Amino acid sequence: MPRIPTEEIERLKQEMSVQQLAEARGIKLNPHGKDLLGLCPFHEDHEPSLVITPSKNLWNCLGACGSGGTVIDWVMKAEGVSFRHAVEILREGTISNTQPTGKRIKIATVPKLPPPVDFKAEEQELLKQAVEYYHQTLKQSPEALSYLEKRGLKNSEMIDHFKIGCANRTFGFRLPDKNRQAGAAIREKLTKLGILRNTGHEHFNGSVVFPIFDEHGQITEIYGRKIRDDLREGTAYHLYLPGPHKGVFNLEALKASKEIILCEAIIDALTFWCAGFRNVTAAYGVNGFTPDHLAAFKQYGVEKVFIAYDRDTAGNKAADELASQLIGEGFECFRVLFPSEMDANEYALKAKSPEKSLDVAIRNARWIGKGKPNTVQQLKTLEPKAATKKESFQPPAVDNQQNKPAEEPQNPEMLSQPSKEEVNIFPLAAKEENLEKLEPVQAAAAPQRVEILTEIKPEEIIIKLDGRRCEFAGY
Image (cartoon, rainbow, N blue to C red; front, side, top):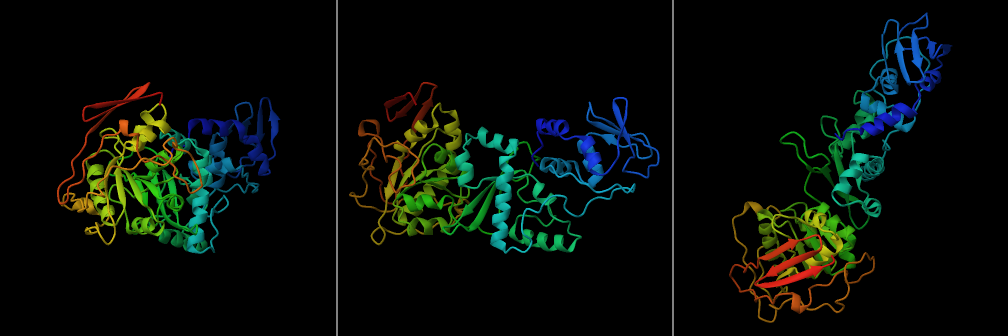
């Protein structure tokens, strides 16, 4: 669970007055030197034993209960809630005016805060309301915002456009306990959807959450990435709704462009998006290219796929197998090659200018091949769990006319640029003097790997390819 920043706790202790909390409950306070005296609301009190010190914003009972502390301790005691729950109540500014009874406060089983969802809503509407609550929570979560900034994703437009949110356990504080009729009913619904677990805890607790929408604005999937990287061994850092993955991230990109950058993960895709490459989508992990992805590529007429998977063993293997599948389906494929053992996000974070560095990577993407439906030998479609198979990559048989390097773009000056229009968002290749001519792919033979050595310096990028040396300065 994301911790509450110390600064936030101290702010609440200073801004929220214990005196106001006591007076809101009808407790009469009388001056006594620098202190205020009144009847303690937490036990049967006939002689004033509650002492409040306004200058320190502290309280203490000198009588039977012996309680005391800060404003947070007061709310915990008065409302019968946990520390975290008390903080949320203070954040909301919800001050109880319940009159003191002198009886011990029981642990609360009814919510002290407004519910995050409509208990009568249908499943899809419940998902949307949960996502909206997480979205608003992220905007008030310094820890979640700091995580995005650490990943180079400090972009308010991105947060609003993709409805990115944060689950920090506060969702459950606003629901009645399961021992209440209303609580049992709504919790059952939310458990079925995957928002809550069978234990009653939030499934995405401690995560930044990324909803996936279809063309009608319906939520098909939610991805959660744990904020902290120091969790106990065995903790899953990547979470999804139960069941098979459904939908395609940033589906509007497929509608707007025939050329798509396909990343291994949503964080990598957002790295490209923030750098101006809006024609980007993501798989659900290294083996997470689903039938939904393939169907969407065909439906919206995608022609060229730039596979920007991680440059590690698993990423390389998955990229080769995916290229084989896509070429067999008639797509033209390129491999975006980051430095060894790096992904798109890591590559961008090390660059002085992520926009220009990612543009260089796209310009120098390695052409793999191009297939034509109905004429090219069709390959067996690989299932998303292809990593468990031992088959090596076998490219399709293609004729010499198809084995050409990528053509020059019609507008080679055009670099990455955010645009909602149906335009070519990035050039397909570098100028010929900066890009090695690739050998034709041989049928029924393993592809020849071309090792591109990349050295990133503060003032330039140096790319070495087959004895050639290209320098890109001022990126």
